[in-house]
Image (cartoon, rainbow, N blue to C red; front, top):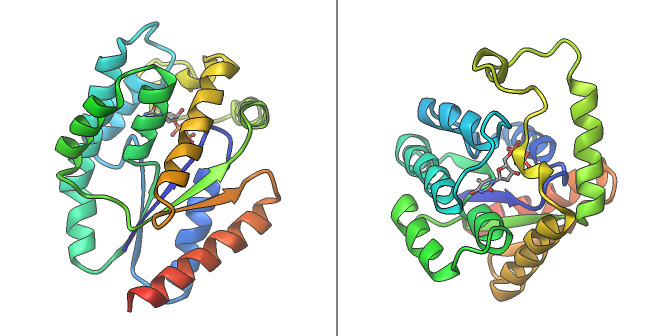
Length: 224
Ligand code: TYD
């Protein structure tokens, strides 16, 4: 089974993805967590270019193509082989992020992005997508607070590549950008309710984790 977590910045996806992986393993399932962009050597290097503030401007199509390049590598190298071994794959972001950020956020045409996504994924789509929904004001505020707290003593490949520690380029975007991203996610979820589940991510981390687990547990039972 292939599960993706999506949503605006600051919805707590990364923490929730880790919790979900832990619960899957406790339940005796072979499970793997991947984080986009990243998860392969190529992905890790391209990620530094994409989300770091070391680059002042990236053309929207260049951005979409780089995210897609990372995705193609991740699908071929990691996701497909794992799925074919029966592993439950949890993706912290997947192709819907490109539709939300490069489509609604940057204004690239959806039809062309869909073609690009189909090429990069070879048609692979998540069986279940959980939207961690959070208003932009709340999400960005949460991320800035977390970023400030993380600066002390942390070493990362961003430093090795001489990129700024305070690195998520997307958080620099105006609230309006993040508003469009959130609306696009809402539209995608409404258009395909058989794949999407919307989760209110303004609640406590424990409440959100419990809901995500109950959704995944139900999906796993159905799969059998
Ligand atoms: P990251 O630190 O992984 O943020 P998050 O924890 O919110 O996932 O940074 C990834 C950023 O890249 C995030 O702001 C969303 C953006 N993004 C895109 O614009 N397009 C994409 O296709 C993907 C996968 C991510």
